[in-house]
Length: 223
Image 1 (cartoon, rainbow, N blue to C red):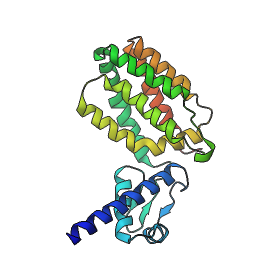
Image 2: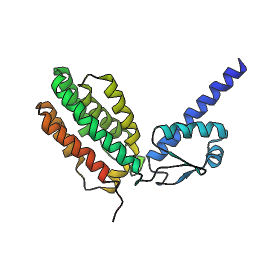
Image 3: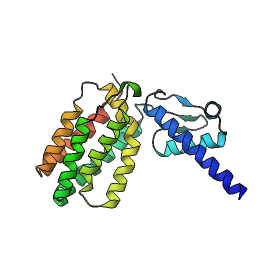
Image 4: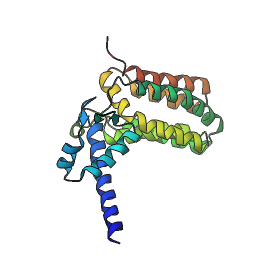
């Protein structure tokens, strides 16, 4: 019983540290490539090294941290090749899913797409109290809009794959927006909604592919 209680406590602490570190990285409190030192984090959060390492391993699995051979953990770099690989995977999968959604989606799907876009368009992308990156409310509205567009495909395996790619690219999305402040993301989302509801699969797929391409382009090294 005592061992079970200890395991439960460790898991609870790891969840807490994971959530706090994830939020801090997403808010830009750690710079790209900055080291995430387990000893310092353990002292900062007043937990054991084992708890911190467990939280960091979870962040690595989510694509929000990287594990460096013999060098511990760090925030990924904005020019990390992995971001381009994730973007390529999304450009390969998501336009196909959107085509399927436009073909298969019913009136309820149309209504949910319209509602999700309305929420996204009316949610402030930036909130002073949350730093220079996207607000948590906008980020969630953004996720729901894109997820709703694809849900019409009706394939849970594809949706699960898309969900994992979305989570892995969340940090890259925030960095890209910061490096491309002139980008009109609201117009891109509006065109996506209009093409999907018009059942124009060719245009919708092209707009989505370009939308994903622009995000990836915002992470290429400046020359």
